[in-house]
Structure formats: structure tokens, C-alpha cells
Amino acid sequence: MFSHLPLYAGDPILSLQQAYLAETRADKVNLGIGAYQDANGAIPTLRSVAAVRPQIAADLGATPYLPIAGSKTYRDAVTELVLGTERYGKVAERAVAIQSLGGSGALKVGCDMLKRHFPDSEVFISAPSWPNHQAIFETAGFKVGSYRYFDAATNGVDFDGMLADLEQMPARSIVILHPACHNPTGADLTRAQWDAVVTVVAERGLLPFLDMAYQGFAEGIDADAYAVHAMVDAGIVLLLSVSFSKTFSLYGERVGALLAVCDDADVARRVLSQMEMSIRANYSSPPTFGGRIVTSVLTDAALRKDWKNEVEEMRSRMLQMRERLHAGMKARVPSLDVDYLLTQRGMFSYTGLNPAQVERLRAEHAIYAVGSGRICVAGLRDENVDRVADAFAQVMD
Ligand code: PMP
Image (cartoon, rainbow, N blue to C red; front, side, top):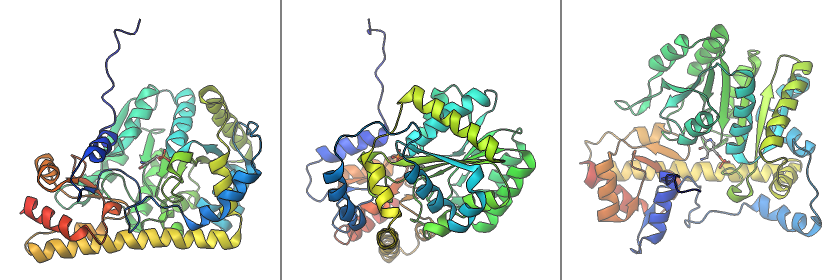
């Protein structure tokens, strides 16, 4: 019956992780997988999470279904977090949110809702983007195009190209945007550039779908939501997917949210109902545990403060590692222009390493990076950063 099915090749980054795990050289380095690792190379349990988790587990008891949209306390806490308290107060009646299965689940729920009501719109993603953007929207039947984004010559954003492409898009096109910590390149827009994007989005009547999976890893929790805030303040209707996988280190619990800021309360109510319709037809309702953890942390002033400190600790450790890698490479080959390591932000950097160089890193140095040249800077730590700088300098020189 299934003999006509082709083999799914799998996700290249997850396959790379399997290859890394099978690697036997003791000094192996994992710069592939998109997970934050601490100074010991471990995926951390955050203090704030550890502070609430045992009690939640002890009190859990039976777990009846949550409402289709998830826990109301969670949804409100997340909306307040991402919009900022004051702005949330202003738009609360026209902002809606559902509790999703991570950021991927939020994208899927939003995508299915859009497919029903914007069937003829094209979806545009950055070139390059997180590969699942294309996969999720194409699977739902959307045509997925791209807008210019990464400039390999500067290892930064081709902003003129991006803006020119946005200006050509038909009204009601769906534009996927990364508010901060662009995956895979680490190249972000400045505030002035976001302001220009806001103007074009408004003028052309585009529908922005912002995907925020790393809030706080670039400049800070509030600063990283600048694009979201600027659009809301400009009165733009938008969708926003949020992931807490990285910022709470709760990858396997699948915690996220999908938000919409709409024209008015009546539209917002209908949008929420359409999100619920998508959820019902996909997985019916979200899981309980991860959402409880995030709610407990966000709604307790002291824990919320500590969590923000922890996000800041993760951010500054990655920044330090960027500086160490940059300095190490410059010390070894002064002519190398690797300043982009310092301007790119968040967990990832596009290094400009080509597939052959990435393969040399693996074969000769047991250093695992993605074939595109993307590295996860959170895989760097005191014990390996000099060795990585050495190896990079060797293969790039
Ligand atoms: N969007 C982007 C840009 C991401 O990088 C990721 C995580 N790799 C996600 C969404 C999905 O996050 P989650 O693991 O919570 O589904």
C-alpha cells in the first residue's frame, strides 16, 4: 500500500546533529544545531524554570484538555510580554493570542488560517530564511517567493534590495519577517531600516507575519521586539509567532504563541475564532505543562526579573564568544575581514564558509557546521573557541 512513498530526506540540520552524536573524536565541536548551550556545553535548565517546575509537576494531577486556544492566563501574559505593558494596555481589546506548540505550531496555525482567507496571496520569505518557513507555507498550498535579504559581499543585509522587493509586492502579500536574530544569517535590520519597512508595508497594504524565536538574544527583550512595536504603533495589522524554545530553554515542551493585532475588537474576535478553527483541525488543543511553567515565571515579578537576567546572561555569553572567535581569527590571519562576526547577532552567524570549507572543518577538525556556512555561536565555549578560531583561520586562509 505504501510502496509508492519516497523517502523523506530529513532535515539537514537534524541529520547533522545525528552525525555529530556519532562522531568519536573527543574534541568534537557542535556548531550545527540551533540550541543554546551554556559555558559547559549543556542545554541549560534555567533557574526560573527550576524554581517553579517541581511544584507545578507535584500539583498537576489529572490534565484535562485546555481550551482550544490554550490557557487564558498564559495568552495574556505572553501578549503583555511581547507588546510591552503600556502598548498592551492600549491595544488589548484588538489583540488576540493562542497558545501554540512552539514557534513552528504558531506558524502552522497562522498559515492554515491565512490559506482559508487569503488563498490567492503569495508568501514571501527572506533569502535565505529558516527552511521550515518555506516548508510550512508550501505544504499548505501557498506559492512561496523570496525577497532579497543577505548580501554575501558584506555579510550584512542587502537593504536596498529588500526594500525594492517589498515595493514590488502585490497588496495583501504575506511577508515573513524576523524581528531580531535572523536565522540563519544573524544579520538584522537597524531601527531606521525597520521604520522604512513599516512605511512600505503600510503603503503597499502588505500583511506582515513576524516570527520571533529569539527575543532577547540580540539586544534585550524589549529592544528585540522593536519591529513588532513599530508596526503596532503605526496601526499595521499583523500576525506574530513567538517561540519560547530558546529563551526558556524549553525545547521539548513545545511552548509558543500566535498573536494577531487587528483593526478592532470585533475583527479580533473573528480572527481568534479562525485560529481556533485551525487548531481544532490540527491537534485540537495545546499541552499543559510547558505553558504552566512559562505562565508561572512571567506572572511572578521576582521570577520574571530573574528570567530576564538569565536571557541577558545567555545573550552576553554569546556576545563574548563572538568577540573571542573574532579576535582569535584576526590574531592568526590579520588580513581576514571577519568583523561581521561582531555585527551579526543572536545565536547564528553566516560565516561565508563554503560547503568545501565546512567539510574540511568536519573531516580535519571534528567541527560540525551547516553546509551553508551557518554556525551556532552558542556551541562555542572557553575550551573550544581558540581551537575553532584556529581551524576557521586555516580553512579560510
Ligand atoms: N522560527 C525561527 C526563525 C526559528 O529559528 C525557529 C527555531 N529553530 C522557529 C521558528 C521554531 O521554533 P520552535 O522550535 O519553538 O518550533
